[in-house]
Amino acid sequence: MIEGRASLLSFTDIPGAPPPGTALGMLAEMADNTSRSLEFRDGDKRLEIFLHRLGDDVVAFHNRCPHAGAPLDWQPNRFLDSTGTVFLCAVHGARFRRHDGFCLSGPCAGAFLQPVGVKVAKGMIYAA
Ligand code: FES
Image (cartoon, rainbow, N blue to C red):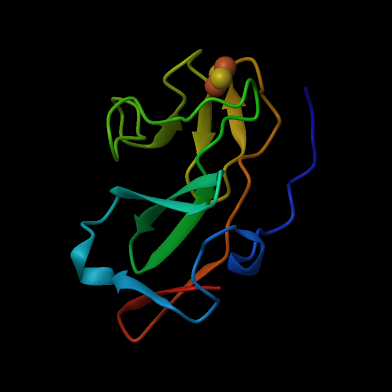
């Protein structure tokens, strides 16, 4: 499966999420190369994203594998494989680059995780 990169999902498009510009936490609260899940609900609509710190930056993705739609994490807030260099889908083992969510191997090789807009400024992580 080869798909183009999905367009950035804004917090305005996530049901129940706070508006863009809302602080999501301090960068220093996340160790480098760790992830944190956030779940948003609006009525029966639910969407889970995860933040991942890469040095002084943070990336975010919809926690949904492009193969069969399963959440990636194999334990709460645990998204990396044993090498600590790629995200691993716990269901069928797809591996994804951390900085852009590109699937390197597995049943959805060539596809991307859905990126979500976040930014870091003055040590804070903000919804975008
Ligand atoms: S659901 Fe992720 S690889 Fe199948």
